Image (cartoon, rainbow, N blue to C red; front, side, top):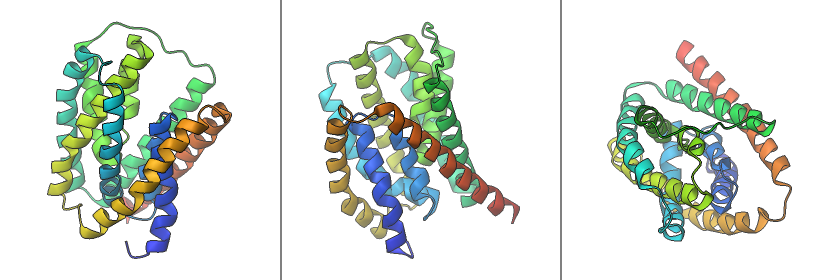
Length: 252
Protein backbone atom coordinates (compact mmCIF):
# COMPACT_ATOMS: atom_id res chain seq x y z
CA UNK A 1 0.00 0.00 0.00
CA UNK A 2 2.27 2.74 -1.30
CA UNK A 3 -0.45 5.40 -1.14
CA UNK A 4 -2.58 5.11 2.04
CA UNK A 5 -4.90 7.93 0.96
CA UNK A 6 -5.74 6.20 -2.31
CA UNK A 7 -6.10 2.86 -0.54
CA UNK A 8 -8.61 4.11 2.03
CA UNK A 9 -10.48 6.06 -0.64
CA UNK A 10 -11.25 2.65 -2.19
CA UNK A 11 -11.37 0.56 1.00
CA UNK A 12 -13.90 2.69 2.89
CA UNK A 13 -16.73 2.40 0.31
CA UNK A 14 -15.82 -1.27 -0.19
CA UNK A 15 -16.17 -2.04 3.51
CA UNK A 16 -19.41 -0.06 3.67
CA UNK A 17 -20.73 -2.35 0.92
CA UNK A 18 -19.65 -5.41 2.91
CA UNK A 19 -21.52 -4.08 5.93
CA UNK A 20 -24.61 -3.26 3.90
CA UNK A 21 -24.57 -6.78 2.46
CA UNK A 22 -24.53 -8.28 5.94
CA UNK A 23 -27.25 -5.83 7.01
CA UNK A 24 -29.71 -6.93 4.36
CA UNK A 25 -28.55 -5.76 0.93
CA UNK A 26 -27.62 -9.27 -0.19
CA UNK A 27 -25.07 -9.49 -2.99
CA UNK A 28 -23.68 -5.95 -2.90
CA UNK A 29 -20.63 -7.13 -0.94
CA UNK A 30 -19.44 -8.89 -4.08
CA UNK A 31 -18.29 -5.48 -5.31
CA UNK A 32 -15.97 -4.93 -2.33
CA UNK A 33 -12.88 -6.88 -3.41
CA UNK A 34 -12.95 -5.59 -7.03
CA UNK A 35 -13.06 -2.00 -5.72
CA UNK A 36 -10.06 -2.50 -3.41
CA UNK A 37 -8.30 -4.42 -6.20
CA UNK A 38 -8.29 -1.20 -8.22
CA UNK A 39 -5.61 0.20 -5.88
CA UNK A 40 -3.79 -2.87 -4.49
CA UNK A 41 -3.13 -6.38 -5.78
CA UNK A 42 -6.34 -8.48 -5.88
CA UNK A 43 -4.94 -11.12 -3.52
CA UNK A 44 -3.93 -8.46 -1.00
CA UNK A 45 -7.37 -6.85 -1.29
CA UNK A 46 -9.02 -10.17 -0.46
CA UNK A 47 -6.65 -10.73 2.49
CA UNK A 48 -7.51 -7.34 4.01
CA UNK A 49 -11.25 -8.02 3.78
CA UNK A 50 -11.12 -11.62 5.09
CA UNK A 51 -10.82 -10.87 8.85
CA UNK A 52 -13.71 -8.41 8.55
CA UNK A 53 -15.87 -11.04 6.87
CA UNK A 54 -15.02 -13.66 9.48
CA UNK A 55 -16.12 -11.43 12.36
CA UNK A 56 -19.32 -10.50 10.59
CA UNK A 57 -20.03 -14.15 9.77
CA UNK A 58 -20.23 -14.88 13.49
CA UNK A 59 -23.22 -12.56 13.81
CA UNK A 60 -25.10 -14.27 10.99
CA UNK A 61 -24.35 -17.78 12.24
CA UNK A 62 -25.55 -16.91 15.74
CA UNK A 63 -28.72 -15.26 14.44
CA UNK A 64 -29.71 -18.25 12.28
CA UNK A 65 -28.10 -21.08 14.26
CA UNK A 66 -31.40 -22.99 14.45
CA UNK A 67 -32.43 -22.60 10.80
CA UNK A 68 -30.21 -24.22 8.19
CA UNK A 69 -30.20 -27.10 5.75
CA UNK A 70 -27.82 -29.92 6.59
CA UNK A 71 -28.09 -31.61 3.18
CA UNK A 72 -26.96 -28.49 1.32
CA UNK A 73 -23.96 -27.97 3.60
CA UNK A 74 -22.86 -31.61 3.44
CA UNK A 75 -23.10 -31.65 -0.36
CA UNK A 76 -21.39 -28.29 -0.97
CA UNK A 77 -18.72 -27.74 1.70
CA UNK A 78 -16.31 -30.56 0.68
CA UNK A 79 -16.32 -29.40 -2.98
CA UNK A 80 -15.86 -25.82 -1.73
CA UNK A 81 -12.68 -26.94 0.04
CA UNK A 82 -11.43 -28.34 -3.27
CA UNK A 83 -12.27 -25.04 -4.95
CA UNK A 84 -10.33 -23.11 -2.31
CA UNK A 85 -7.27 -25.27 -2.93
CA UNK A 86 -7.61 -24.67 -6.68
CA UNK A 87 -7.97 -20.94 -6.03
CA UNK A 88 -4.85 -20.98 -3.88
CA UNK A 89 -2.88 -22.78 -6.59
CA UNK A 90 -4.13 -20.31 -9.19
CA UNK A 91 -3.08 -17.26 -7.18
CA UNK A 92 0.21 -18.87 -6.13
CA UNK A 93 1.41 -19.78 -9.61
CA UNK A 94 0.00 -17.15 -11.96
CA UNK A 95 0.60 -13.42 -12.26
CA UNK A 96 -1.42 -10.75 -10.44
CA UNK A 97 -2.66 -9.68 -13.87
CA UNK A 98 -4.22 -13.10 -14.38
CA UNK A 99 -5.89 -12.87 -10.97
CA UNK A 100 -7.24 -9.40 -11.80
CA UNK A 101 -8.62 -10.77 -15.07
CA UNK A 102 -10.62 -13.49 -13.29
CA UNK A 103 -11.82 -11.13 -10.54
CA UNK A 104 -13.00 -8.67 -13.19
CA UNK A 105 -14.74 -11.39 -15.18
CA UNK A 106 -16.58 -12.66 -12.09
CA UNK A 107 -17.75 -9.12 -11.28
CA UNK A 108 -19.05 -8.60 -14.83
CA UNK A 109 -20.86 -11.94 -14.94
CA UNK A 110 -22.46 -11.51 -11.51
CA UNK A 111 -23.52 -7.90 -12.15
CA UNK A 112 -24.93 -8.81 -15.54
CA UNK A 113 -26.80 -11.82 -14.20
CA UNK A 114 -28.39 -9.79 -11.42
CA UNK A 115 -29.52 -7.09 -13.85
CA UNK A 116 -31.15 -9.76 -16.03
CA UNK A 117 -32.97 -11.20 -13.01
CA UNK A 118 -34.19 -7.72 -12.09
CA UNK A 119 -35.73 -7.41 -15.56
CA UNK A 120 -37.97 -10.39 -14.91
CA UNK A 121 -35.66 -13.37 -15.09
CA UNK A 122 -37.23 -16.51 -13.65
CA UNK A 123 -35.60 -18.90 -11.18
CA UNK A 124 -36.94 -22.37 -12.00
CA UNK A 125 -37.35 -24.90 -9.20
CA UNK A 126 -35.34 -28.13 -9.35
CA UNK A 127 -34.61 -31.02 -6.96
CA UNK A 128 -31.25 -31.47 -5.21
CA UNK A 129 -28.47 -32.82 -7.41
CA UNK A 130 -25.16 -34.16 -6.03
CA UNK A 131 -23.42 -33.34 -9.33
CA UNK A 132 -24.69 -29.75 -9.49
CA UNK A 133 -23.92 -29.30 -5.78
CA UNK A 134 -20.34 -30.43 -6.38
CA UNK A 135 -19.89 -28.10 -9.36
CA UNK A 136 -21.46 -25.13 -7.56
CA UNK A 137 -19.51 -25.81 -4.36
CA UNK A 138 -16.18 -26.08 -6.18
CA UNK A 139 -16.85 -22.94 -8.20
CA UNK A 140 -17.98 -21.04 -5.12
CA UNK A 141 -14.83 -22.01 -3.21
CA UNK A 142 -12.60 -21.08 -6.15
CA UNK A 143 -13.99 -17.58 -6.77
CA UNK A 144 -14.36 -16.99 -3.04
CA UNK A 145 -10.64 -17.63 -2.59
CA UNK A 146 -9.89 -15.14 -5.37
CA UNK A 147 -12.30 -12.33 -4.52
CA UNK A 148 -14.81 -13.33 -1.81
CA UNK A 149 -17.37 -13.65 -4.61
CA UNK A 150 -18.61 -17.15 -3.88
CA UNK A 151 -22.24 -16.11 -3.48
CA UNK A 152 -23.32 -16.33 -7.17
CA UNK A 153 -22.47 -20.04 -7.67
CA UNK A 154 -23.95 -20.85 -4.24
CA UNK A 155 -27.17 -18.98 -5.03
CA UNK A 156 -27.45 -20.44 -8.53
CA UNK A 157 -27.62 -23.94 -7.00
CA UNK A 158 -29.46 -23.31 -3.73
CA UNK A 159 -32.15 -20.77 -4.71
CA UNK A 160 -33.92 -23.19 -7.12
CA UNK A 161 -34.21 -25.70 -4.25
CA UNK A 162 -36.93 -23.47 -2.81
CA UNK A 163 -35.75 -23.41 0.81
CA UNK A 164 -37.77 -21.30 3.26
CA UNK A 165 -36.30 -17.78 3.52
CA UNK A 166 -34.75 -18.10 6.97
CA UNK A 167 -33.41 -21.57 6.19
CA UNK A 168 -31.75 -20.22 3.03
CA UNK A 169 -30.21 -17.28 4.93
CA UNK A 170 -29.00 -19.53 7.76
CA UNK A 171 -27.53 -22.08 5.37
CA UNK A 172 -25.77 -19.31 3.46
CA UNK A 173 -24.40 -17.80 6.68
CA UNK A 174 -22.95 -21.11 7.88
CA UNK A 175 -21.61 -22.06 4.45
CA UNK A 176 -19.64 -18.85 4.01
CA UNK A 177 -18.52 -18.76 7.64
CA UNK A 178 -16.91 -22.18 7.13
CA UNK A 179 -15.57 -21.23 3.70
CA UNK A 180 -13.97 -18.05 5.03
CA UNK A 181 -12.20 -19.94 7.81
CA UNK A 182 -11.00 -22.53 5.29
CA UNK A 183 -9.40 -19.71 3.29
CA UNK A 184 -7.21 -18.60 6.20
CA UNK A 185 -4.45 -21.23 5.69
CA UNK A 186 -4.32 -20.37 1.97
CA UNK A 187 -3.78 -16.67 2.67
CA UNK A 188 -1.15 -17.53 5.28
CA UNK A 189 0.63 -19.70 2.72
CA UNK A 190 0.47 -16.81 0.25
CA UNK A 191 2.08 -14.52 2.89
CA UNK A 192 -0.78 -12.03 2.59
CA UNK A 193 -1.41 -11.44 6.31
CA UNK A 194 1.26 -8.77 6.65
CA UNK A 195 1.49 -6.10 9.34
CA UNK A 196 0.06 -3.58 6.86
CA UNK A 197 -2.89 -5.76 5.86
CA UNK A 198 -3.81 -6.67 9.46
CA UNK A 199 -3.56 -3.02 10.49
CA UNK A 200 -5.84 -2.02 7.62
CA UNK A 201 -8.36 -4.71 8.61
CA UNK A 202 -8.43 -3.50 12.21
CA UNK A 203 -8.86 0.13 11.16
CA UNK A 204 -11.78 -0.78 8.91
CA UNK A 205 -13.64 -3.13 11.29
CA UNK A 206 -15.59 -0.44 13.21
CA UNK A 207 -16.82 0.94 9.90
CA UNK A 208 -17.90 -2.54 8.83
CA UNK A 209 -20.00 -3.03 11.95
CA UNK A 210 -21.50 0.47 11.72
CA UNK A 211 -22.46 -0.08 8.08
CA UNK A 212 -24.01 -3.45 8.99
CA UNK A 213 -26.41 -1.71 11.36
CA UNK A 214 -26.94 1.00 8.75
CA UNK A 215 -27.89 -1.70 6.26
CA UNK A 216 -30.46 -3.12 8.65
CA UNK A 217 -31.96 0.37 9.03
CA UNK A 218 -31.71 1.46 5.38
CA UNK A 219 -33.05 -1.71 3.76
CA UNK A 220 -36.50 -0.83 5.16
CA UNK A 221 -36.39 2.81 4.09
CA UNK A 222 -34.73 3.25 0.69
CA UNK A 223 -35.91 2.28 -2.83
CA UNK A 224 -34.04 -1.00 -2.90
CA UNK A 225 -34.46 -1.73 -6.62
CA UNK A 226 -32.79 1.52 -7.69
CA UNK A 227 -29.95 0.98 -5.22
CA UNK A 228 -29.30 -2.54 -6.51
CA UNK A 229 -29.39 -1.40 -10.12
CA UNK A 230 -26.69 1.21 -9.42
CA UNK A 231 -24.54 -1.31 -7.57
CA UNK A 232 -24.75 -3.91 -10.34
CA UNK A 233 -23.85 -1.38 -13.02
CA UNK A 234 -20.89 -0.28 -10.88
CA UNK A 235 -19.92 -3.93 -10.53
CA UNK A 236 -19.85 -4.31 -14.31
CA UNK A 237 -17.81 -1.12 -14.76
CA UNK A 238 -15.28 -2.02 -12.07
CA UNK A 239 -15.09 -5.56 -13.44
CA UNK A 240 -14.44 -4.19 -16.93
CA UNK A 241 -11.60 -2.06 -15.57
CA UNK A 242 -10.01 -5.05 -13.83
CA UNK A 243 -10.52 -7.18 -16.92
CA UNK A 244 -8.76 -4.56 -19.03
CA UNK A 245 -5.92 -4.28 -16.47
CA UNK A 246 -5.52 -8.04 -16.39
CA UNK A 247 -5.47 -8.40 -20.16
CA UNK A 248 -2.98 -5.54 -20.49
CA UNK A 249 -0.75 -7.07 -17.83
CA UNK A 250 -0.79 -10.49 -19.44
CA UNK A 251 -0.06 -9.03 -22.86
CA UNK A 252 2.83 -6.89 -21.61
